[in-house]
Length: 346
Image 1: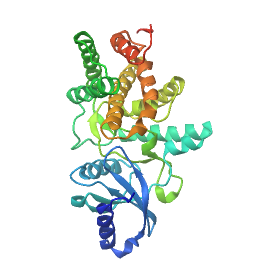
Image 2: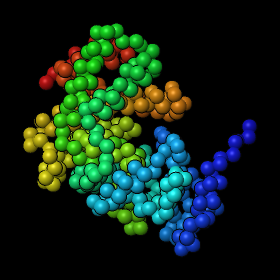
Image 3: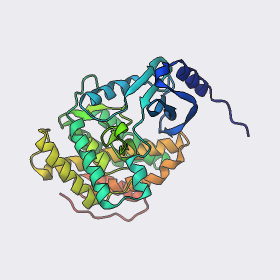
Image 4: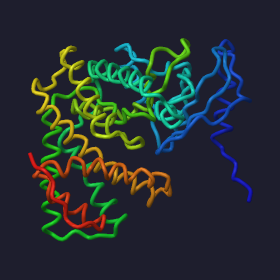
């Protein structure tokens, strides 16, 4: 079977050859670096400073301007994000500095001793605290309406499409009540810079001095001004890496202590803060179940199915702890073919 030619590759090659000679680019060395759940792709090529990265974000599917804007806010705050070496926003092309080969996720998969793992995550938590001090100028609001709208992905794609279950009126009303609680809790927090996917696949291990301080931060183009606890929930209930609850709690306490020292608006009572970030993780992970179901059923990206049991486990971890989420737990038991579980309530 012959593969159809990729017109974007010819466009990328022509653009690279038009860039200033001092970049010392070698377009003939262009090779895939990674792709993500959207239309964006990334390529690596040899250049003056070792290597550089091409972001290919084809219009009209993608827009590089949010990436440029959010990256500028983070760079101003002193965080390690890719530098813009050249740009052609109208073509959906950016040339970026390379932050290295390995993400946190890749290193974890390859095997890390606990001391190195803890050191990497302490650096990530410190970067998170710094990121939450970044300006939110020009970022859309992650408010109650948006939080609630995103939760609708769960009944539509995970319950309806993935499990083929139609909710009766009583179940749908109970789920709406849960969603209102979650959206209200998130929207009640003082807004800060929210990356939205601050987790192991988007954090680069930077060991070469040319790549800047650890961690390098990627994939921030969907940044919003929203709940303080959102990115911590992303990090400690990582959709691609299972962290058991004692580890989640350890990192949450470390974050809380650093955030308080930095003057961030975290609750002075850790128990209250813990509840808020757990509820935020429930909101996020319900949305992710819907997103992963949609990526599989609509977009044919079945690799995301492998992560669903982990995300479901994170959802259950919180749902069984609080009486307010009993209707959700009952629904999850029906979807998973389990007998109704009795959980502890606070």
